[in-house]
Length: 131
Picture 1 (cartoon, rainbow, N blue to C red):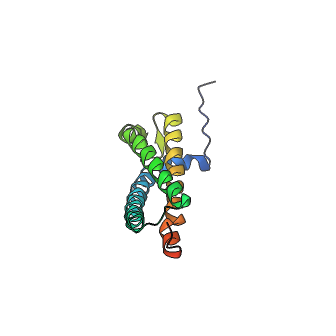
Picture 2 (picture 1 turned 90 degrees about the vertical axis):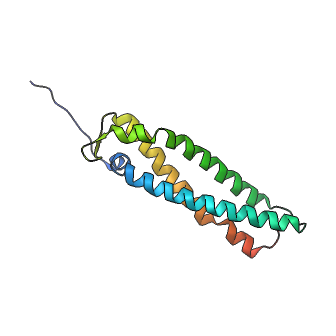
Picture 3 (picture 1 turned 60 degrees about the vertical axis):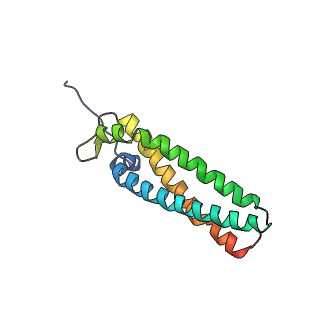
């Protein structure tokens, strides 16, 4: 018998197939998140200048944002290499395992960033004048 290749196609292949689209979406959501962080920091500094104290929830959110920004920077370092591995219009990869793991990290980070944005510490600040 000749050589045979078995390919399993599942929902997991979306991590590779949607990699470019997810990277663009992640970049945009990171920009929104950074903007939100700057707004929160400005507001916190204004209120701290008036003698208010920072809420732990606000500090946890700011720390989470900084952590995700650092992870994004690390992820972005290998972006070009991972995109160069894609072939067949982004449906396949020259290194499937690496592209799958990278694509999965991008997808998970996108969800995490969207969650941080939707948690909206600004909403908390509007409701509670005490920081």
